[in-house]
Amino acid sequence: MASALKVPFQVGMRRLFYAVTPNETSFSDVKDVPPYTDESGPFFFVLIFLELAISSYKKDGKYRLGDSITSISAGVFSRFPLLFIKAISLVSYMWVHEHFKIFELPWNSQWTWWFCFLGVDMGYYWFHRLAHEVNFMWAAHQVHHSSEDYNLATALRQSILQSYTSWVFYLPLALFIPPQIFIVHMELNILYQFWIHTQYVKSLGPLEYILNTPSHHRVHHGRNRYCIDKNYAGTLIIWDRLFGTFEAENEEVVYGLTHPLNTYDPNYVQFCHAKYTFQRFLDTKGIKNKLGVLFCGPGWEEGKPRTGLIEDIPNVKAPHPKYDPKHSLIFNIYAAVHFTVLLIMNIELVTQKGSLSQALIICLLLYSGFSLTCFGKIFDNAPYAVYYEITRCAASLLLNWVMCFFEVYQPSDRPESVKFLQILFLLSLVSIMLFTIRKKDKTA
Image (cartoon, rainbow, N blue to C red; front, side):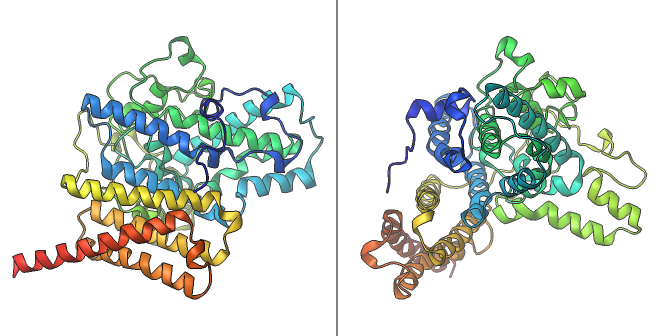
């Protein structure tokens, strides 16, 4: 597999903290803009493993394997469409800029860079706020809030649908900001929000008045009543202070949704609220009320304020029990190893997509999606989860044979991660079948 680090270590780390200069991040053409998010994958995991090591040393339970794998799985899911199509935010922005721009600011001006920085950040604030206050948008965004843990892995818990509701908030910038400058700030704005998903940074002193910090974002992820609909900032907390949505951290936060999902199934995590909203829309009587289901807050009901009543929110206090099915050490090792291999395969898929056929990409995506579903079921202790896992392992071998048969690639040309998968999954298939037979013998 090609080197995981596409950029120097210190450059990759600086990007995560928006610690870049206008000169190094200004480009004359869209094609010259680096794929910042794709190149940041290794740096995400460096910091995740560092935080995991701290948590393990302290034995404070900040990480739970099932929850962390579900978060990373959601991140993998969210990137699937980008293997086939360009991001809708980029396509729509470029179209508006090409057809409706009033004038174009110079791409190599520091004033343009800083103006775009502020414009993208304020656009994110309003998108994020409405993603909490408008139910059909919340159907996508709730994915990110569904974890009951708060750590760097939680930052990767993203929605596959969210980009289709956020793009419109940045279009005013297309009237005068060059697309290449917009893309830079869109990506860096999101990258900045990765590191603030931690409980180990308590305060940044005077910077708390200006920047979105771990303390501010912990409040945003809380389901305590004082945390609801607060601190929508991306990079700068000044927008919350200006628009009346700021709340300081003043008691221990209980994380997650007000009504927890109680599952690790990645498909349910992604689509449960969209399905619920659609069914509620169908069941609701009257056009006005139907529109209320879509455009009012997720807590709205007929006769209540647009965003619902705070009294309807369960009044929780820390410590609060979490959904946490128990598994053996052997199981956790097995799941961690297999998930790591699957992650390597997906990283290679992203980095090598330009040289892979559409057929191979589709096959690997279908396999990845089914595999992530299997992980969710076995962490949920779902009935027949072991049979899902046997099917997954068998599918990896069958997939390899089918792709060779149809000459998607020759056996000698298999990607390195796929070669590794065949050996690992063949061994695991045998072990799981033996486990199943032994389990049946004991219950006979």
